[in-house]
Image (tube, rainbow, N blue to C red; front, side, top):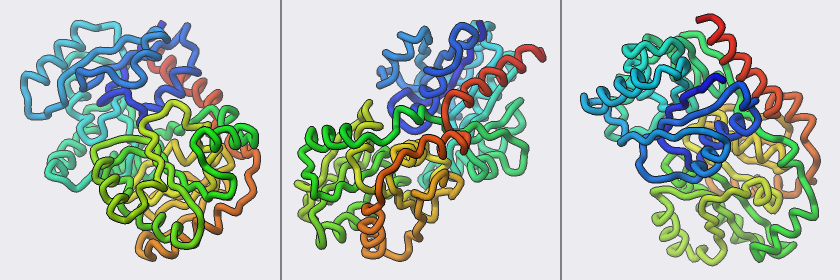
Length: 363
């Protein structure tokens, strides 16, 4: 059995974590096993499932590129675990820190994986750009969720695309399931349910999403379902109260039943400031759900005719009108379109398994 060490921040229900779990569930675990090195001490949403599937979880402190103690602990870990011939790193710009220590420790296969097209422009931004430059130097292989993500992260170096594949059949639209889920969340049949799935962070642009919903609410009976959690949730709750919208918002928190929740939605609004290739948009299309995305989201995500892209600059009112129009779209079974686009998990899991196997055989 080949054990692959995936290096992440944590295994909560975010985009890249959900992508990894999709692959983990469908890969042949008699031949390939996933283990995880995380950078949080507390347990995360997927930890129980990982352990049930036979995976190990190693917990490290928060990644600090300036800490020699952290680097030394990481290097010692790799030396103490020679069973890991492949390390697959998902730490965006700071991946070079892990990759370098893995290289020094003699790990032969070191994969860097890009999941985004930029970083938040906060105080850490210059530091992240500095470390991003060294990723191709210390990685033996480069992967990305899409072309834009790979071009941004790897600056011209060659990379392979690993699709953010999903279990498309599990997302197929079901009218009975839709009615049941809407009843569960007290959404009337004549209420327009706007949906969004994403961490409450600056990149997801919840602030503008609330402005869009306010415009929708002025003209029609509507509710907004926000799936996820994060640092900005409280701020968005306060804004909704100030706008007089709080009672029309559904804050679900982190959920394990996102496919079911998407069945209940009428339109999926995704005004992000930047993205890689969001797995949530693939899931939404697999659910037959019409989607409005910003011009900052790569059109690589368009696997059906359910995607409509709008500039952020045109304002909330135009977005609201487009959302109301899109919500009139008749739901349909899009499984074949998703599968033909290469985003059904079965074939992709086999490809990844063969990729890992070939790397081991080449040693």
